[in-house]
Every structure is written in C-alpha cells, then in structure tokens.
Image (cartoon, rainbow, N blue to C red; front, side, top):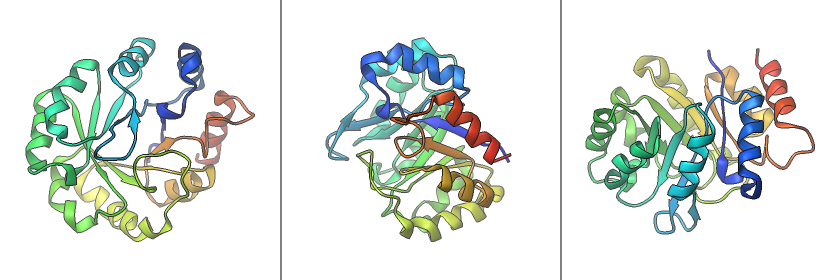
Length: 218
C-alpha cells in the first residue's frame, strides 16, 4: 500500500513561499494540498488564485484543490485551468454531486470527494464507484490547529472496508500527527494531509520529518 504525504499549504510560511516549496520539493513530498475557502461554506478564507498560481509555478509535483466553497461545480474549470490535478469537493455543497464528478473527469482531472465530520458514509456511498479519491475530514473544516475528532473513526473504518471494492485512494485531513499516520496507514489509509500536527512549525527540517515518517511506515 502506497504512502502519500501531502503538505497542507495553508500552513506554510507565505512570507518565504518560494523557499518553502523548494524545501518541500527537496524533502520528497508527494503532492501539494490546497485548501480553497470562500468564507460562506466554511467560516474562513484561504488560498486564492494567486497563491495557487505561485505554488504551481514552483513545483512539478501533483497539486489538488480542496474546494470548501458553495457551488463548487461552478469553479471546476477555473481550478483545472490553474493546474489542479485532483479536485475535491464536498458533496453536501452540491445539488447534483454525480454531475460534478463527471465534469471533473471531462476536464481530464481526478475527482475526489471530501467527507466532512457530519457527513455519513451512507450519504456518499453511491458516489464511490465514480471517484478517484476520498478525503475524510478528521477535524471540522475551516481552520488549522483543531484536535483530531475521534468520533469519525467508525466512519473511516467503513471507507477503509470499501476502498478495495471501489478502488479509490483514501486520505484523511485534520490533526494528522505522526502517531495517527503510523496507526492509520497500517489500517488502510493512503494519503495524509500534513499540517501543523506533523510537519509545519517544527524544530526539525521538512526533509528529516518526511524521511522519518517514511521510515516508520515501511
């Protein structure tokens, strides 16, 4: 089972963004996670088009777009044109989420759903045959630095059990510590969104942190 390490760029130091991306590239991260918030679907704003364009220009690694916005279908082409390789949206923000998945695929991109803490497995199960990625939120969406919400674990177990049948890449986002990576990668989670709990604002280098996580999960 692959281990995908995806730094959450809303946690990066934007006063030294070029250096941040260079250090993350050299550390061997797999993908860049880009949170997009509109202040309406979630009570916060994050990562506008200029941020996206800048980071896209600094790396050849895959980038996602995690659309925590109202009417995400209206912005699929916009973020595809900015260079997103994977586009996540929240199914509860769309009236016709299956059509949104089709629109993403029609642009040649990978489609993902982001499952919020209050969204059940059963609510999105019918979408699973058509998605490439599933991202289970392990904090309430909108802000970094929250504690891991343990009540989502039974739901995460349901996605782990369904992963092989539907052939999607399963990830978690929110308070992802090294301990959680070690525990949940063994259970079947592939993709880990790395924020302040595991990667940023630490006394050790990104390269050392990423190398240690990979060593612990060989």
